[in-house]
Image 1 (tube, rainbow, N blue to C red):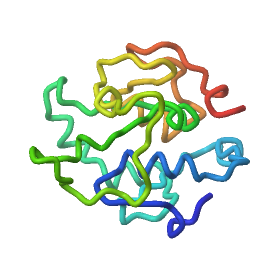
Image 2 (image 1 turned 90 degrees about the vertical axis):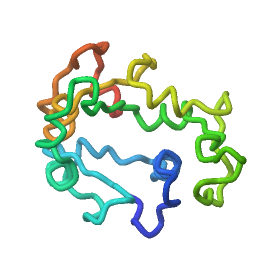
Image 3 (image 1 turned 180 degrees about the horizontal axis):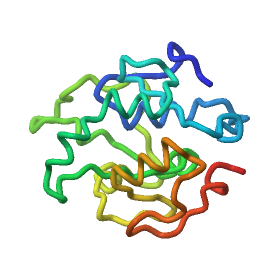
Image 4 (image 1 turned 45 degrees about the vertical axis):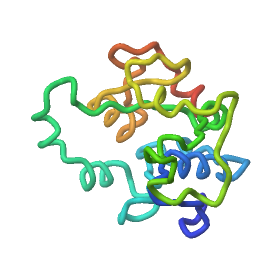
Length: 172
């Protein structure tokens, strides 16, 4: 695990922060699920919660489920789950979404260069939950919580998605 003070971070560039966290995770990538079969951990650089907090605590403290359940279906949260090795080869951003109409950055960019993998940018495609992306899953809150909070009991199939092999995804 990377200590929080060693994780690269730039405010307002969360997708790049996640990329850098995946990129800098130890190369031997300890098999987290095998060591911690009962719970998932969350490493959120923007949270005031503990680094590596258990998923159930994170969910309870950060998600307002009562409020979100009041929204119409089209506004319900969805989560695109992308295995870290795939994210490292898939994600590309030229940071154009961070520019104002005059071409000036809305927020100062990170010190590292923009991340390019095959194409200049695909962030909006990743955010569009109606787009199918191979080897990724789109889940509603209920499916995402079930998969993350109780990983060993997670459904092997999520509503509207292709079947996925949890063990293969996590290197088991």
